[in-house]
Image (tube, rainbow, N blue to C red; front, side, top):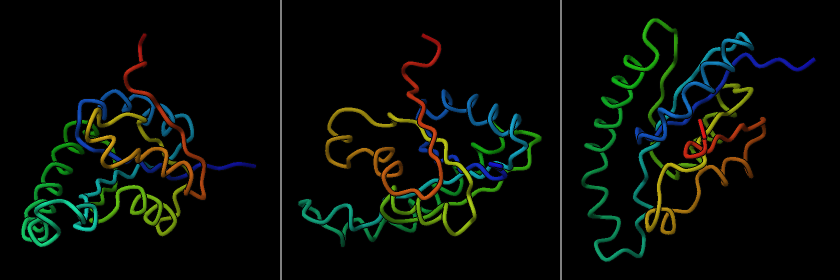
Length: 150
């Protein structure tokens, strides 16, 4: 028998995160699963080869981590008011950190939006959802936030 007791929901705080929320809440409710939110701040290694390089980025990493933690707190309070959710903020390659955290925390399912970024950012950083689908050891439900409700 398949049991889903923990759902991991990666959030990037873009508007698209809000569009995936109803699916996360529905699945958690129907399966009786706990929700864990994760936000990953890009690590300095994502900026190797850029003109300003990793040293420049590293000097801001602490501030970005602190900002990510504040944004995560607000997101959890606003979007999951009254629900018991766990939150995590990590630093590194986004897809890799999501996969690592899912394995470490005993995640049974990941629900992720397919399009958080568009244009040049997507080309430069690749598709996080694609990386998670390819690397995760648990099932991954992908939701295209731009097709929801159409």
